[in-house]
Length: 252
Ligand code: PEP
Image (tube, rainbow, N blue to C red; front, top):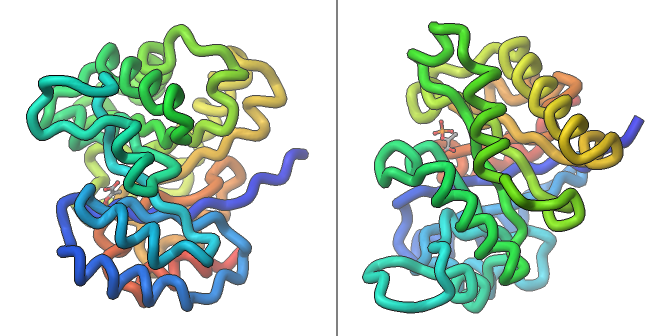
């Protein structure tokens, strides 16, 4: 069985000033990491640079929350993958549900964003997940598979090597409602089987699949205990150093 290094990633969304970001990463840099997890923080753009500089001598990696699909041009307010990389990011989220639902990112747009990130050597954390309505209509696996199929269309296993998938049920993000460990495991197993079918056994076995949606210090252990859950993408609690530290140090 392939052993996969766990990943604990924090998505700060539109929170934290530069000073607050500096304070938070300084605290995180001192946190114990008993599971030798890969730790990632995703600040908003203005704080990418300070976070990268303060984390330079630590194993904590810095991600952008999104990138534009073009490299440059007349796209007021957008940030390109090259600019995010220049600011210090080594990874980027693509397809977070807030990008899909609030900003209208379609599968086609996300596919172009993945291409832009890969062009610039940014690792991708590709987010998928169903709405409550889709879950209640028993469409979860179909929706998630469709998001993977369309969002990652046209890339080979070699190009996608190292991609991280985040399963985030929309109904669990920022709501305090968490998928049960069994619900998460069912979807993670289906994602792994899709990756295996599409990109081969080695790819399926090696790809890390994170769970996101109201992960807390109090529920991380039971979620991380599931076989196909390789980590967590954390929103709210990643803003509080002590809580995020406890999540990083989940009990196996
Ligand atoms: C997220 O933003 O990806 C997320 C999972 O948020 P929260 O942990 O607050 O539900």
